[in-house]
Amino acid sequence: MKISSFISLFFFLSIHIFPTYAQSQDDGARLYSHHCTLCHGNKGMGDGYIPMKLKGYPQTNLFDEQNAIDKESIIDVISRGFPNEDIIKFMPPWEQELTKEEISDLATFVLFLRSDTEAALRTLSKYTDKLDKTVRDGKIIFETRCALCHGKLGQGDGRMARIIKTPPPANLTRSILNPVQMRLIIKLGGQEVGRSPKMPPWGDFMTDNEVDAVVDFIDTLKD
Ligand code: HEC
Ligand code: HEC
Image 1: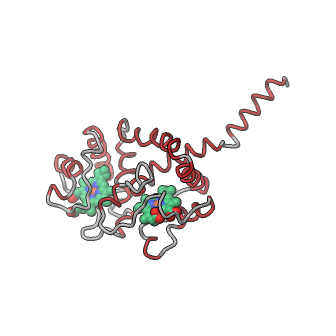
Image 2: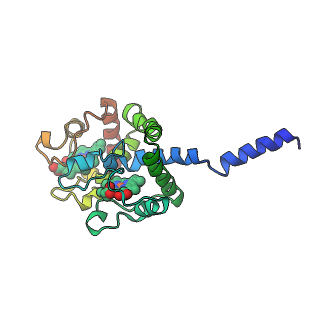
Image 3: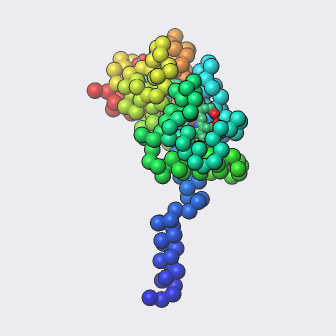
């Protein structure tokens, strides 16, 4: 074998078998944009929708009052939730939903965010901007913005349903709203249409096309 083939084999192996640190930061950013921004925010500064809207919700700034500092303890918090009786119900454990590798990438990303904030936010914005501007796929929008309350299949059994009770997040598979009414509550939020303020308004965060896409997706969930 020629030496050049050895070299390319080496590069092939190093890229495909030993994922690089940069790759892990990037994967972590993508996972964070999907699973964590609704609480920790697009900047990790506790600027997520949920803590801003729910009264008495603990602050979720990843830079302040850090409890989990090294990689191991961060992995622990992400896997098992926050180790405090009062708070654990607010920081859900992820070990059932994400693989060990994904959780490790997320921990790498949290460390990246704390140590080289600007570079980390640049990496993250690749994914959050994409969600804001170009995603037309109702399923992805639903999973990132609605499932936490309404549940992955829209049955009203998302994790936040443990906290939001009167009324709980609606079971969308049984919704009797027509598409016009549905678009309205999604865009304006519950309060504006005389329903619960805990159903957030999405009009400023989603384009009309995105709202249409998510309404179409909800339609596929009905039995
Ligand atoms: C439903 C809201 C919610 C979601 C979703 C969520 N968290 Fe949290 N998280 C919290 C709360 C509340 C705390 C405890 C307050 C604090 O210390 O910031 C917390 C704490 C943490 C901490 C410990 C911070 C410290 O004190 O050192 C880490 C790390 C963390 N979360 C990472 C994540 C990651 C990564 C994800 C996505 C997989 C995620 N969280 C998703 C609410 C949430
Ligand atoms: C913070 C939790 C939360 C999030 C996130 C959330 N919702 Fe809701 N949603 C609620 C609650 C609570 C209700 C019940 C309001 C009521 O009955 O007054 C509701 C009601 C609804 C309804 C009315 C259903 C009916 O038949 O009455 C629709 C449609 C809906 N949500 C769609 C969405 C969509 C689409 C998203 C994501 C873009 C979303 N929701 C995100 C909490 C949430």
